[in-house]
Structure formats: C-alpha cells, structure tokens
Length: 107
Image (cartoon, rainbow, N blue to C red):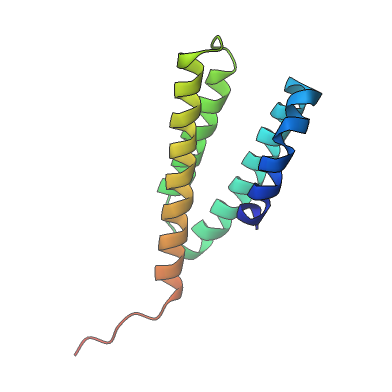
C-alpha cells in the first residue's frame, strides 16, 4: 500500500520543503511506521529476521544523517539508508511470496 502512495508523496515534496524540516521528519516517521508494519506482517509469514534488521539499520542511518552537515556526507547517508530500506522490502516480499506458495512435490 505504501508503495502506491510514493508517487503522490513525490509530487508533494515541494510542499513539504516549503513547510520545513518538521514536515520532513513527520513524513520520515510515517514512512518508517508503515514500513515496520509491512515488514512485521511479512515476518509472520516467512519467519526471517533480516528484513527487520535492515529496516532498523536504515532507520538508524536516517537518524544519523540528521546530525551531519548538509552536503555530500548527508546525501551519501540518505542513499545508504534508501538502499537498506529497498533491500529490506525486496527480501520481505520475496520471502513472503515463497513462504505463501506451495512447495513443489519431490518424488
């Protein structure tokens, strides 16, 4: 569901920039809450911890970037956090689909 909302959020980014850092922090928090819900739901299906760990690492990197000065270091941290979150969601989706599909019959 949150993946469907992403295009709308991208369109809303200029408005968020106008509203200030509080709005940015709110959107990041909302995104992390929705992501946590999605990954925990997937974990109930596939029982693996990796996606949750990657989500936590991505959230930690996002929090760390808040204390780094603007510029290349901050941008690098944002990219690292985004990669961690994308990999977490990708693994969660793959493992959820595998766990939900019937296993092949071996004779």
